[in-house]
Length: 424
Image 1: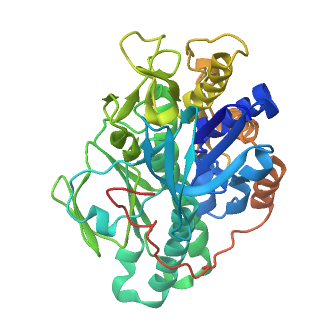
Image 2 (image 1 turned 180 degrees about the vertical axis):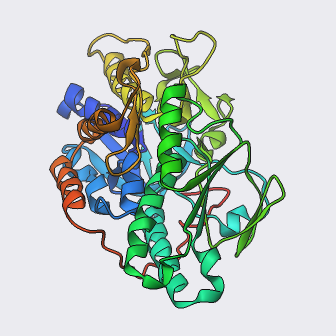
């Protein structure tokens, strides 16, 4: 039997690492992938699931089909015994198990970043998975239907507050405003009712991490769709039927969506290894100091950014994917296949999907807007997805040709929907 390699996490970094290991080592190693889901979730298209543009199954790519030859353990990792080289996990039925390793690739990703704001954990919607995206869709449709039927709470039900104007928050607000504008056309009772979307962020502009021109493009699209962009402002307190803003204003509402960035999975803190702001410290080869059998990458690792000395790489899918490929290369090199390399990646640009024919993109640093940005954005997503490309493309074509379906699926508010200090 060859060396036992365990990949913990199957996000952008983990999936790429596992595919690379299978390609480089084949049957010469026993490769196991441990993840709480049986699929890779293409997170950038979650807002299109919420607005009904893309079917949820189409952004969930089967790990079993994508990683033939790997052993898949669908379970939540409880602890990792670094000294004993063992991963302890619990499956969906509550049964516990363990998997031993000779080499560990740690790509556990990130969870919602919380702030100590009263009421947020209880009343805000998280936004990190399909369950949350689908529930939010049901919730939005429900609020519009109830607003049409119950005039007393109409204004609050037609108010939607999104906190965080980064990638996810900007896309949720932009596409959500487009979605509700289509929904209300079905209800004559709401013909004169304003539909309010508020996008809040303490930063001075939306998408503060991007080029100012892209930020202005997104801001223009948001405002054209009626979104109230409140920069320099956030939520001071959340309640079931309203939020108090940091400026003192009380806003009656029934929908609060939390998109205030992410933090590394708390599992990293439990390893007993050196961390940097919650991320596992690694060297430029992605190896953990004093533990050469462990490599880590993606959101869970503080990878030195050789293009910006003294800093670590950002928590983006672009870095995670490329670090995953390097992790596979360096693990294979440690087993005698090839040469190790350091991680050095220059930013290739970013894309922001705003729904319809609107987008903002900066391929190779060239800021684009309008149809050119839309074409680049959709093309990028199709290339970046590890599967289901034809299905997603078909969804986009149907959305362009057919009216929006405004029906609830009857989903209940499960444990994954509200925010929590620690999530599986």
